[in-house]
Amino acid sequence: MLTLLNAFHLGIKELRSLGRDKLMLFLILFAFTGQVYLTATGLPESLHKAPVAIIDEDRSPLSLRIIDAFYPPHFLPPLIIEQYAADPGMDTGLYTFVLDIPPDFQRDVLAGRRPAIQLNVDATRMSQAFIGSGYIQNIVTGEVTAFSQRYRMLPAWPAELEIRARFNPNLSSVWFGSVMEVINSITMLSIILTGAALIREREHGTIEHLLVMPLTPFEIMLAKVWSMGLVVAIVATASLVFVVQDLLNVPIEGSIGLFVMGMTLHLFATTSMGIFLGMVARSMPQMGLLMIIILLPLQMLSGGMTPRESMPEAVQYLMLAAPTTHFVSLAQAILYRGADFGIVWPEFLALLAIGSIFFTLALARFRRTISSMA
Image (cartoon, rainbow, N blue to C red):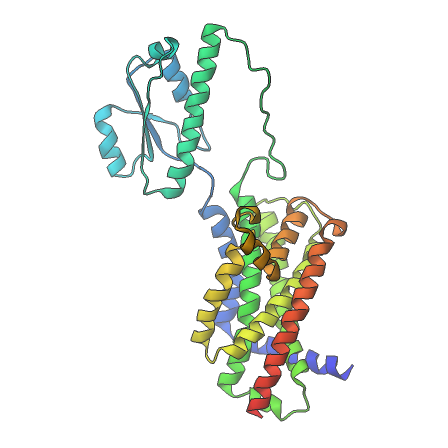
């Protein structure tokens, strides 16, 4: 009981110290508000309002049908231009795509020939260029196929593919980007806050004050874990409710309480990692460099940006030792699919085991460091 009481009072000290750090408070608030909103709305992964121009040299019912197939929200209403205006328009960035329908296109299609349509793409707009080319190819192919079948009275296909998107019917990138940004901010700030708290005490000389008190390294470390983890948990939960749900109108299918329980176990692991890094780094610049090395793999290979199934098997097995892999899986199952504890309990168990290992390693390192300073 005395150990918990000491850890509680030390944690209050950490919270007061954080409250005096205005820059860190601004970073926390911005990461869970402005950063979440900007990431979700400012960088859409799907095609959205792409400018397209069409050179219609055929002026046939088929070419008009192709023109009418381009509509929002994927594309802006297409502009009909002459051929001489294509290059200047793309040079100035007016059009991302210019589709050139050649003369006698409909006649050649109905005659069984394979006429070519030229698509010019502004490849400096990488995301739109890559995704939009596939969209346009599917649009043109679909319209030509439907027109040919109706003109020749061909029978319909015996089976048709009916696509139904589950959990995100409109394939909105806002739904995905907002939740993933909250998860990334939880990982980033929990490591930064605990590591920075330890380095700050070392730089200010206050850690020597702790050494002369009747405190154990376990109590000092536990205080930093629960205090910094509590700050991140409160702000992240508020961000999920007020920014993701209310401001961005992203539906949360599962229990937020169950998600917070999983987040608590994740914070147990990441705050322990932060203390370990704070012991390794001797200054904040070194801590920043270590954060780059640690955070990039944790965020990029956890399954939040790219499905784990598309990664090499060696990477998949290696990332099972990272808490973010299990936390991303847990968060997606709860928040997107409405999973209950009976489904996500393996992720809870994995986070508890990983957190215990990281806490033990960080405590051992902390004890060695404290012993060398005593």
